[in-house]
Length: 222
Image (tube, rainbow, N blue to C red; front, side, top):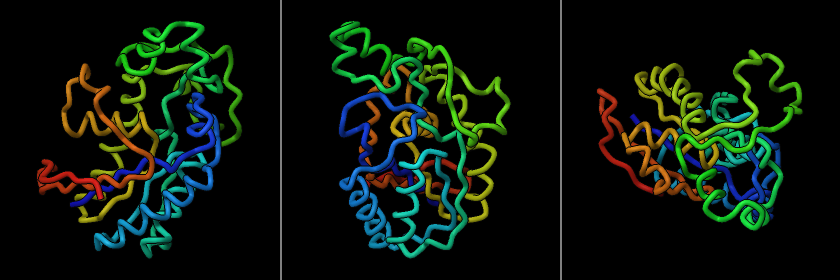
């Protein structure tokens, strides 16, 4: 059983160095090319993707679609879910990271980014579009810690990905830095105090192979 994790290609926010969270920003041209190359790496590894899971944000969706196109798998089912969204950075969304360091101090910004239970300053209000209209409002916070991000990602693994893997499917999961870090931390049982050591570069396929008991047999970057 195989699982491919890919963080989206470089986004406009990555390039401009501001917090994105659930803000829906596009890929840069570099990000597009990164996603295509990721798809070519998947193809060269002779991996046959059976379905893909993506967030509901365009940088994830476009990356997944480009990976599928380049790996000759554009026809497979794609499932878009808010559970794979980037961490909700609350009132920090849209703000430059270096400017926040000057305003609040480097240590505080580091705690917001890496402490498992640290919640960022909450947004006063969410201004989301209709992609979230069907969700119970109680599921949508105004800011998330890494723990809260993990708590919404893991049910996707348990309820939707595992059953497909047990059918022998090879699954592509195209998410974001923190949603994928949360999943990796859970899969590898990494202590939460070491979570900041989990590195998920843009558009770099990470391949896991599992046995029938869902124990990890191997992990490598393509």
